[in-house]
Image (cartoon, rainbow, N blue to C red):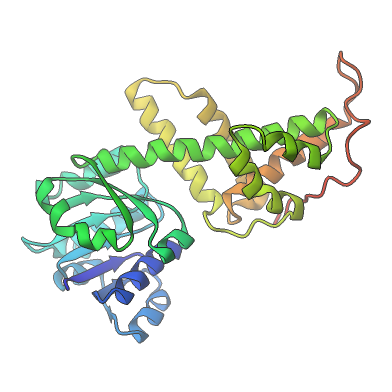
Length: 314
């Protein structure tokens, strides 16, 4: 087994480290808050003083941090990962960042020293080893680290460095778009007087059926325990729109979904699950619903008196 470093021990990084340890990997770990590393160190991992110290002791370093700024902080400078990399050490970058961040990191490394490998899935998928790992990089390091990456889930090698980031942005475009469309469909149903039960029955016959069924308990209870924090979904929407702008394409639906996420974050829901945007969309619909009749007549008579949701954590 190779020795592997994990830099960034948040919800995803800590679980990636735990799964690798359970698979028998020797681990060296670091986190900005050292307390996050303590459970892994107690289980046998080595703690390091800096990201560079991690890189000096391992064959591969995985970075899993929240955003582009955090990636710069842990990879660049005298204490960053890049400063500690040996000739045969690979940096496996798993954070969700934009195309500029990936290009910036690639410029600091030899072609075969970097795998651009963001993942699709959340904490449950890490724990079960069912992530989708989108990989960009040269053939040799991909082949070398395929067994390691396969411990985490299904590996898709999509092209050179940059392809992994591109794939993750494409995948998350659907994620933020679907949750926004679901919220607007529920809001329209409420505004037109459909009961919540009827709205979900209708949505069960559409392309959103699986998502509607999955999100229904949270909508009805008003509880949105975090699997993928809403502020991170908003960050990803920003990255998607930034990448689109650089290529000259317009993503009108994604822009609208991003605005809903930003609105929910401003309302204090940033640390809830990103699906809490549904509560914010429905809250807006409820606030507007008492504003009078449309040209087709009142929308209110069929609306349930208790729609069964509340916005929490505000």
